[in-house]
Image (cartoon, rainbow, N blue to C red; front, side):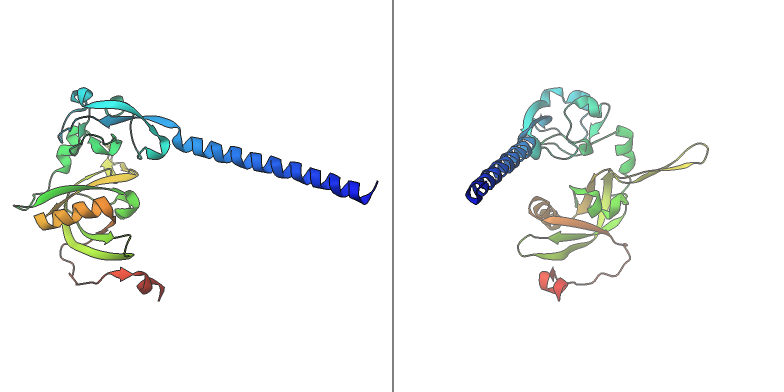
Length: 238
């Protein structure tokens, strides 16, 4: 068998192997792409719903929709039965997806509102991952530091200090049974934290929620209040 024949045979084999690998890669890529666009059923608000609305009264204000899986927000629900008997913990607006974190049992909602809001202050709710809210260890009456991290420039600023927390949904809860046994329920993946702030600060909070990253720190009400400048990339890497 000549060398030319062997070389040609080897080239053909390599070409076949390359073709198989390319086809496999393309098929895998197609499968990944299809997984991202595979539609999922979610509930979407069709008309604004006030805070405190019972789930049983929401039927005419929501509708099912099919969205790509990549567009479905965490904890979204596809049926009101998933939150039966609960009420909305914040106003819901047309076009937004329904998520479990926006609902609570009426008795829990009433119990969470134990903090007196300073006169003239606004209450504004932020939804954040548990990792950005002290692991979920936050309750009404606590005060927090409000950190903002804009994407451009890449910096982090302590924008507000000693902000009063008036309500928390989804945080760590501890209950004591009749026999004295203490049970701790872990926090949800996301928390709804309501803050009491002055009007100018409410604008800052709303803008930060809409366009930037946010972290909350547990800050004692009697703790020192210091002026701190922003932390930038060069400060971290120096």
